[in-house]
Image 1 (cartoon, rainbow, N blue to C red):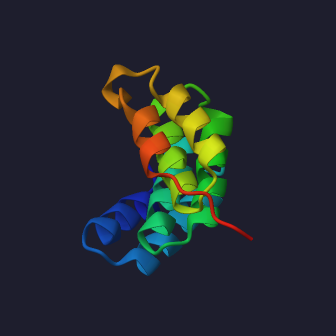
Image 2 (image 1 turned 90 degrees about the vertical axis):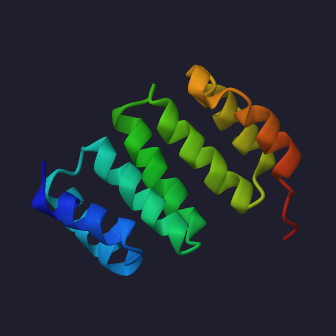
Length: 117
């Protein structure tokens, strides 16, 4: 496990999201195919309302570990924030393969509001 990942996690839990992002990016430079690092970077981007960047990182995480329900759930939540409702529901349904995410699809349907361009 990368020391940058550990520093990124510590910064994240203390609310230092910019530092967290820098550390996670360094961890990814060391291990570009580590899905955990991409997922954590996505969560840090979400914490500062950079949802499109978060979605890209969740996609990277899923490229390496497509069956991880947490990555689908995280992407669902980011998609809700940008108003991509159909995509959010699709990700929720994939996440619901894990019973701990039961009801995420209903949450997405009830809380997503399409954004007009």
